Amino acid sequence: MDDSGDPTGLSAIARSLSDEIGPFRRTLLNSSRARAGLPLIPDAQIEVLRRLFPDKWVSPTVLGRQLGLARPTVSNLVVAMERSGLVSRRADEADARSTKVGLTDLAREQLHVYDSAAEGLLTSILRDLTPAEQGTLRDALPLLGHIRTALERGEDATVNAPSGPGNA
Image (cartoon, rainbow, N blue to C red):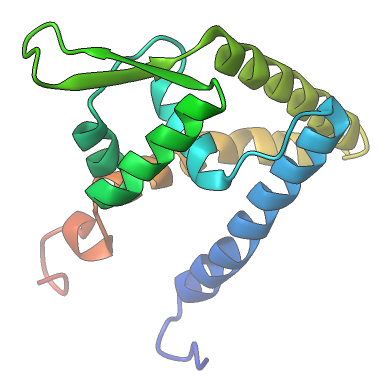
């Protein structure tokens, strides 16, 4: 791709970030699972667990909206996770016709074990970085959080562009 129209280099940064994040996440997930001896849990189920952690109870409709998934997909996920003992359902206190989904103790324990394994794995790798590299990574973490929040809100560069001359 020709980046000559982007003197800031932001397109190249965006492409590199996109190229690295997915594989990084999958590699960390699989390495941490293996290290902790945890069962293979599909990524979509991990996303559900993270949305419910530690003690949130939400409707399948809300889960679907948060994850950008269709109602039948969420329904199938919840059924499979309930069968695996990872979530349970209860009646919505405000509307007995509706249900809410929450984590089981097993799911919380597996997330704790996974998080400990991931932390240990990353800590051992981070120790091999120079202090300057560690500082650069530390400084980048809030930026990654900001980018994630903007993505969750559906924002893009045009929404956040400052107004003024040359920025119509």
